[in-house]
Every structure is written in C-alpha cells, then in structure tokens.
Amino acid sequence: MTKPEITVIPKLNKVTYDVYADFPALGNRTGDLAYATDQRILYYWNGAAWTAISSVENTIIRKTADQQSTTGNTMENDTELLIPVVANEICEFFMWLCFYSWSDPAFKYAFTVPAGGSLLIVTGELIGALTVASDPVVAVDGTTPIAEILVAACDREVFVWGKYVGAANAGNIQLQWAQNTTVGANTYVRANSYIKKLTIN
Image (tube, rainbow, N blue to C red):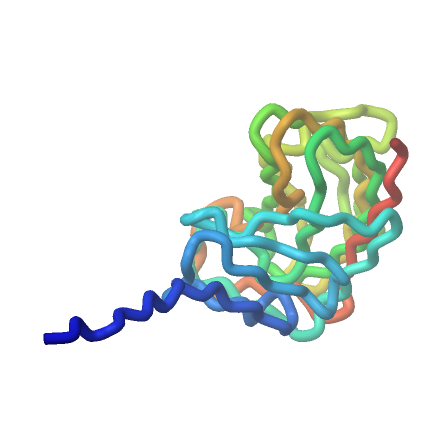
C-alpha cells in the first residue's frame, strides 16, 4: 500500500498596513509585521507589543480626533501621540499639546520610553500659572508626571521640548496623561495636538 504524501504547510506571518492606532492588539503571531501609514514606520510583533524596526529621521504625528479620559487620575496612553525610536537613537522632539480640564486639580502628563533610555524635557504653558516643573529653564525627567495648574475649566496649550538618549532597546516615546486628582468630569486631549522628532545621530 502506497503511503499518502504529506505536505507541511508552513505557518504564515501577516502584514498589516494601517494607521498605528488601528494596529491589531489580538490574534498576532510573533514576527508579524505592520506598517504605520501615518508614521511611515515598520513594526514587528514581539509576542507582547508592536516594536519599531525602522525609523524616520524627521517625524511629525498629529492627533486626528479628541481623546476623552474617564479614568480619573490613572495615567493612560495617548492613542496617537507617540514617536517610534530605534536602539541607541538620540533625538530631540517637540510637542504642542492642547487639553481641556477643570480648575485645580487639573491635568498631568508624562512620557514612557524604552528600557534603558533617558528623557529630559523643558516645558511651559501658554495661558495660566506655571508650576515649578513647567519653568522653561529647568530640565526635568520626562518620565515623571508634571501637573499643570488651571484657574478655570477651559482649553489650555502646553509646549514641550525634549532630548531622548536611547540604549539597546527600540520602542516608543509614549505620551501618557490623566487628571491630577480625580474629579467628576471628563478630561480631553484635543485634536491637532502634535509631536515631532528630529534624529540627531
């Protein structure tokens, strides 16, 4: 009796072509690729998260829609304002952030960076009182939350300059934000806020 032939079908990885915010979070296989059309960056799925494997020296990311937070003072990732960086990258970046929050307690923000990387920022507010941390002549750790003080519920603009020095890990400079102290109302980061990067090395 002739044994039937057995054909081994290899496991296939998929390629996604979409804006970063719409990358799939479930059903991914290690090694899957995704190209962010809004960032012009190629990512791969490392088994737990999308990781950048290419970089664009000059990148501008604009927020396309308001984002609402109902999580009080728990920091959460902004869904659009993040910049991919590769291993050992050194870059400067600038962020123009428009947010709506309530009078003090108001709004706080920080950044996460790849393991081993460091981020120093200087920041200021266009309207309203400045915190000590928002004094534009003082460089502070960008991964430590900074609180912005408001005098009334309204839109406010904050500008941030930063320098990132990377280590062996690629990833994202990711904006996180929340209310400084929980209040019974929503906080927003507005559309057309943006972040841009210039690679130095």
